[in-house]
Image 1 (cartoon, rainbow, N blue to C red):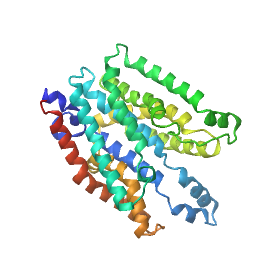
Image 2 (spheres, one colour):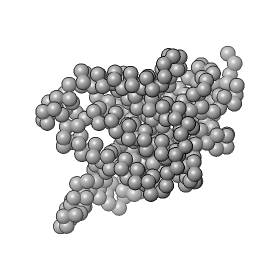
Image 3 (cartoon, rainbow, N blue to C red):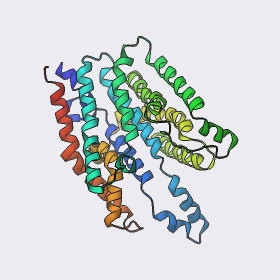
Length: 353
């Protein structure tokens, strides 16, 4: 029983058994993309004011280079994969599963909310610094996963049903976004993925999370060899389409609620090949270790950014200092808060009550 309970951790901890190589590196780079998309890049102004046209064009491209919401959607897929992979044959103990998942997400989340509120003294700190909407979605997915597990239809059908429901919600409850896109003018346009509130956003994002479940179902059934050139080409394609999605949001009224669920198909395809690539190639041990605190990095980066702005002006010379400090402080948060939370979650989930 204990072996089965610990299988979720085995996916991301090589010391405990089964290990999906490269997964932690992927999570670290996804968290880094979120950071780069949220931090204002001072190099943008320097390039835009250059007398050379090529530099001006690059300066205009900088704000769109990194699609943070695309990285969040990829996190949803990875989350669905990590949850379902050890449980795809049988979900043995729902109560322990829920305790563990809620505590792993919830305890660090509560800690950063309290720390942020104390350090920055903002009443709306969760809106200002923490991407809390996506974490609420994750908690909802963990909660309904055992219910979805019991429905006796294939996961493929569950995915397509959820995709259709999400599409209906976007069409009928998100008319400002849809009409703005059709008429190519601002008719109540916002462009964000989470504008319909937590519940509707969770429903819209559910098919993305279920793509991770489908990935877990498929990854051991199909073994595809992929060379280094192809995997880097695929990575470049993902970054490019993410950039296009950013530009389309601001200039073509293509809301993220419209583009991201379609982008998720490419992300699924990319992650499938990433996992297969690392079956035959070693991931960097540095990025694998840094991936262990990707959740802390995701949680803390907004708070750290706001805190640094109070003491260190952001400019061309301090930009990399901002990023380095964010990574370092997030690692400390992982050691002090997140890692002990994982241990507590494991211990509490095994208590006999």
